[in-house]
Length: 272
Image 1 (tube, rainbow, N blue to C red):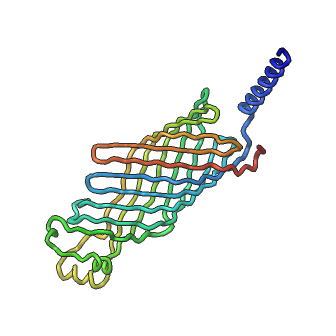
Image 2 (cartoon, one colour):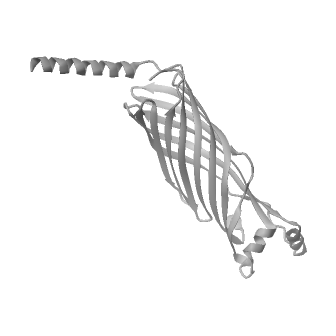
Image 3 (cartoon, one colour):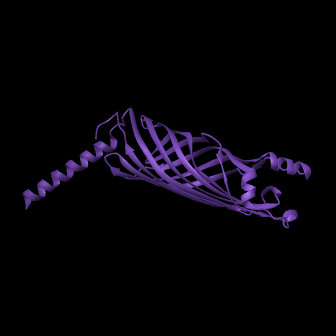
């Protein structure tokens, strides 16, 4: 029994020493990992609803575990409902097919105290081209309420393109508790988004005869402060899982977003 206890003590001491050595080992000068994720966000208000889904692929490069740069490519699809937005005399539903976009995220680990990290982050994203929307429904309102509109004819003479870009900045307070890294983000999101309406020659002539000059661009963007709660989990051998979510009700809108990312090591600065 004494021999068994001694062996157990030595083994426990050895494992504890290795764990402490790994915990306090300096980070590699350079490292890399691949992020693959799926996310969605929903914005609901009195004059518009937006549902977006997206897939993201992002190689992230790290220097001394303090500076991280992650260019990414993303595929996004969006559904937009407009309910007399900006005083327009109609309701409309638009579906935007999957489209590619490019962007980049930069983060700097500014302050470390105990097991806490204060990280500054910035991100921008833009599409590779304009996205042609599919007009799902159109309902005249107000002074147009009695007008009969054939949606198939409308699709043949009117096209709607979506133009957008996004920029966001935030501060992240992250905890380092072994395999679990919870965090909270506080930041600001700016979405520059508009719908460009184009009429063919026949529709333009009809509008000109009726002395009607509709707007060519309609704002569908938004900007808001936000918070986000999330956690990153170490799965072993450099693999990880990141999950985050936010729920932000305001006086005229409710915003929800969630995302899950699988983290795959692509290390060239260390060995496992």
